[in-house]
Image (tube, rainbow, N blue to C red; front, side, top):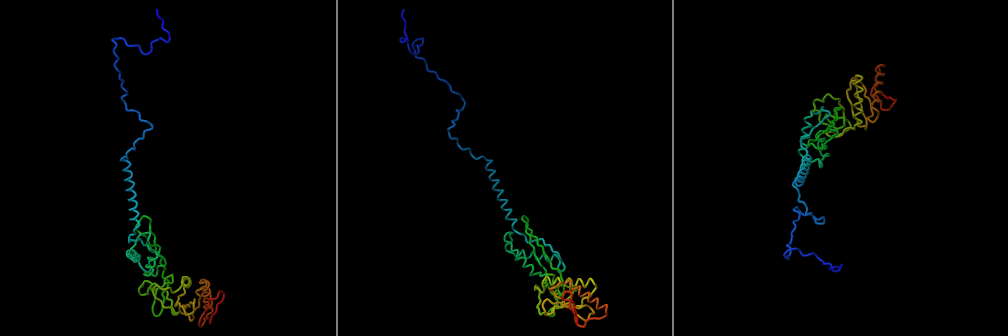
Length: 292
């Protein structure tokens, strides 16, 4: 019996049993699913979706609509809204027509380049009674708003044989014949040599206020004013009452209420004593009355 040592053992696979032929090769089928992508492989960029393209088109159209709306709304229509606080001279429709014509004559009627100063000057030239023109342009609407401050009629001015209506702003408005509804206003005779004409400033607003206060005080006491005169002396005013043999000197730069009060008190005293000044009564100095 033969013993095999460790070094004498046969190596390798034992030959197959059989007729000594080589075994046929075997093939194994891999998994049928797609191969797993490598994490290091660059992925192709995904194509732009139709939804993203439509969204961009919508945004572009929206911007175009907004821009077109802004441009359209920035153009002012020549059909303004006109607000007038006094219609003693003309009805509101007259100012409305003038405002429309003024806007229609402008070549550039955009909100950003609108000539507000030019529009105001044009309106005041046509209507001297306008003391202020406020033009409001809305942000969205195309219809502007004209707010006209009208100087109320104060008195008729007799100058160089002509009679003019003067407003509370001290400006000659028009010939009295053009405004027959204002013919009953008190008349102030101008002897200062000033050449009056429509649109010219005759007196300051303080002097106009003085005359208005004086007339109001006389009316309150039932005193009928025959005439008011502007002499050649500066800031001077002379008043003559109905049936009075004298005239009264006033200072247009002084206190109207004080001077009117001094005059009415002195007149009451003279009437009660049945004496009258022969020429004039001077109430220009506070607390003192002079007469002749």
